[in-house]
Amino acid sequence: MEINNNQLLRFTTAGSVDDGKSTLIGRLLYDSKSIFEDQLESVTASSVKKGHAGVDLAMFTDGLKDEREQGITIDVAYRYFTTPKRKFIIADTPGHIQYTRNMVTGASTANAAIILIDARHGVIEQTKRHSFIASLLNIPHLIVCVNKMDLVDFSEERFNEIEAEFEEFASKLLVKDVRFIPISALLGDNVVNRSENMAWYQGGTLLNILETLHISSDINKIDARFPVQTVLRPQRDGFIDYRGYAGRVASGIYRLGDEVAVLPSGFTSRIKSINAGEQELEEAYAPMSIAMTLEDDIDISRGDMIVRKNNQPEPSQEFDVMLCWLNNSAAKPKTKYTLVHTSNSQRAMIKEVVYKMNINSFERDSEDKDLAMNDIARVKIRATSPLMIDSYRDNRNTGSIILIDESTNETVAAGMIV
Image (cartoon, rainbow, N blue to C red):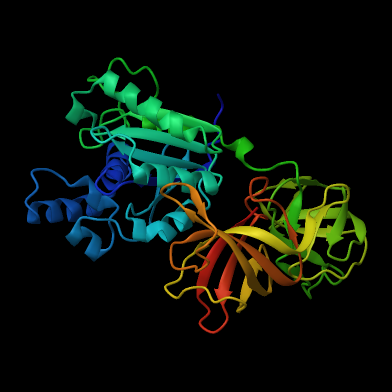
């Protein structure tokens, strides 16, 4: 399979406390030679200070001082590394229940989620909770790493039991691609290098799977959506009459000469030019940042969306959203919030809480209507004017929103349009 060397894969890690997420990422960075000398020296010194026999790999990701002292992950730690085949951004998210919002934040842009399971404990409540959130966020690929295989004598039988247990409950989730790998993050088995202790496992190592995961088809190439972020009017020689619409292609493909419609006005035109910086392009696709000109002079401003004439999103003023509440202060009914959808900002309110989701049991609670931090609920939202929305399942970019508290300017919630 041919891999694009510039292709970026974002992945998140999730698992219960002490399942070894930070150790796994430390091992991945350490064995793939992605750690700088000064980082290695700093972590080696900290490991000696704490009385460890060797290098404590978990410290490579636990960047906050509190995290190193307590030996836990608190915030989302982003790490960047690259191999000859691919670039990676890792979001290492906390396992504790009180940090559900951090997991939602870290996983919202991920192509893949690594779910860690302790081989001794098998599928536990937090495994189900993290898998449910990964499914809710429509992460296309799940990689289930059964860790600490060295503590169960590298037993193939135990690995098969956990795989069957996970598949039984995951059949209720909408996840397209699930892979299973037996690993020992501490010893390095099947992380970057193949395990000599588990010759019975014939699949690829974790790094091999991350490098070869097919992610090109994860982006929606059918529904062309181009939210306008700004209008370019450069007042300089050669560009006096230039009027370009700049932004990032949310999904789909745009080609020169395509007939397009501008929403919400509904006026139609054709694409005259596409530019990425100084470069003129024949076509543009997600997630490219471009400037586009049209053959007709139409009144277009930030927040408008350029789409294909025969494939348009549904303009909706009222819609249902699966909302994750991120703020310490509870949601206030009928309060006006600033709603941000692609490049469009407007006022909106939570009209009704339909039900709250118990993310441990997957049960719906229609009685409790109070939204507190880390709660996930289906709500009805009403905006001041129609938004050009798609379902989050079809389009992660045009199917997501955030709510901002107008008095504090804090982001209080993130939502997936149902």
